Length: 228
View (cartoon, rainbow, N blue to C red):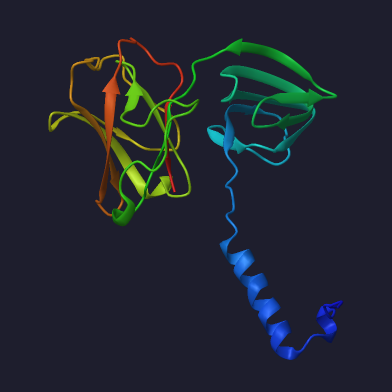
């Protein structure tokens, strides 16, 4: 005996409704993988398309037109390299980058940045992500003279970052969209300290992020705190 499945347009109304419901369920519950940032733009010169600002991140799969005189300096996360590209079209992937009809002016080894994702509301307060390149979960590792950079859709909700040691304030730094650089006159942090970074919002709410101070004296690449 041979069974034949009727085409959808000839199926009973109840069957068509069932097919539609199944399609909605498939679309609704299919996981969507968020694009991952692969580079931090540190300096932009000339016209680039799309327009980019310094200290913004670029996702994997991005293509940037540098035209004839556009110049872009960026930190490539997967390869831990500082790159200066000029002219042509820059393409970035999860593994590498390339420039067509342009040139790489300079490329050098750089520090691999620490990068964590921090929940922006009380219900999800805490660390929601991990540092780059497979480092273990836990406190954000920083040098004795750390640098920080707050990024993400909710970054503008915070007005200051305060470093505290055992409940006592060490330094308060206002947030203005640029990297926070430890002042030369400030006392360096000690690896044995019990440090916490406290983000204070415009509504006076706070978010806390534990820090682990390493034996590294200085830090050239800012630790990135992503707040969504």
